[in-house]
Length: 208
Image (cartoon, rainbow, N blue to C red):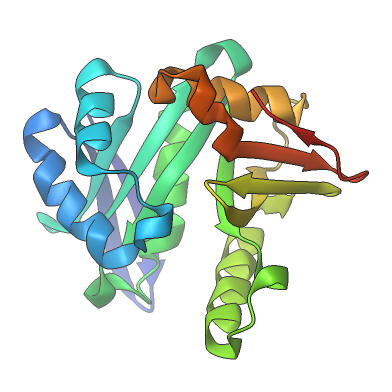
């Protein structure tokens, strides 16, 4: 399946396409994930390959002129009309050309009627000024694309403090139940769900 996305940047019409990937493409995908995501946020390779092979995860390359310029890994959950964007990144040389916006737009077309869910690092817990600025700029980008932070929810994923962002206009629901639904099939072992923590405004952790 290939979806097109066109936009004008300056005076040039740029067309991006979204291509589904299979298990044979997961090594090329994972090389990019290792470059773009720290080990604390990155699933091991075997889990990514197993997820793509089983259909629990859906992976995509975004192409520009036949070259890979971005990628995404998603967990669709039709029963909740929601899709978790596990990983999303743009190739360094493609930044500033609208590629990130195009990738989000293509994913919205790929999952019509779904609320798209993102996990981003919580800058409130980052002491390094440079890293904190990167986190804030990432959040600002998603907000400009129509995403908003779910208020009054703290979320910790394998010990990393995160924020949950969702696309506007999606269906409401229990955040804790939703995140458990995303992760339980992939983790296979219910005991690992203790690392997926949704903490409400009163500070009570809810674990699977």
